Amino acid sequence: MAVLSSLLHLTNFSNPFLRTLIPSISVAYAIQAGVAIPSILAGTERFYDLSGSLTYLSCTALSLYLPALRARAAASAAGAAKPEWPSLVASMLGKGGAGGLNWRQVVLSAAVSIWATRLGTYLFQRISKDGSDSRFDQIKTSPPKFFGAFMAQATWVSLCLMPVLALNSVPQTALAGLPVLMITDIIGLLLYTGGLSFEVTADRQKNKWVEEKRQKQHDEDFLTRGLWSKSRHPNYFGESTLWTGIATAAGGVLLSNVGQLGIGLAGGLWGKLLALTMAGVSPAFVTFLLFKVSGIPLSEKKYDKRYGDRKDYQEWKKNTPMFIPKL
Image (cartoon, rainbow, N blue to C red; front, top):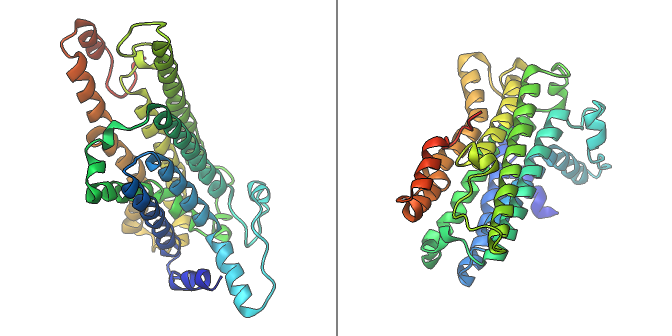
């Protein structure tokens, strides 16, 4: 408890955003380093994706409950009664009180947690069945590169969570000054729901196709049915869309006068631009990774190498958009 109190004291910055950001991203890098060391020693990538999901869940929960942790630590140090933990139900009903949470903080934190749990479980089941991940065939033989992959994952988590961390840093008393529902809330949640549904459906269709191929129910070499007939990478489109939804909902708050004051900005043009950057960095970074690093380029290169000289593959590639689905 003394260690926790010291850490909370060291990160108790005057700026509300930094007071949430620094502890949260510190936890991200600590978790990834903690998983990286045994993974390097064992030479296995089995827990890489699962640790990413754990990091998302841990950082999101920490950012949500940091004000309560600080209040309870301060009360303990003063010998006073500790305040109760904020009730999620009361927060959703707008009855969280001074030490509670705003419904937007609860919903967007839950949105991240649902996505992280689903994706982490899916990827862990996949690698448990396949035994390895081809992305790490070369990387895991080099300890520095393998460790770098875990640090890159910590950076990915930190940047993607930026709009949620910023939103969770705004005091509930300030958020109470916002309208009950804003247009950015509606648009953001619709984008998130649509994107998540698209990603889940695409992954399930791919899983079913792979399982059918293992059972020799078809002899197809690449999937061209369902959502995969609308986009060559429908799962990636869904992922980019859901993070755009989270950024939209959070950005509506951060760009408001309430949000500007809540995260310690002075407003004006520069304050708005900084808030827009905090929200927009998440979908921008996700989409950059998908287009330029580990998503689409690796997949396209692999399939082009295997089937690039086949007419049916060339037709599918020609008639199916790479990313944004056709109607």
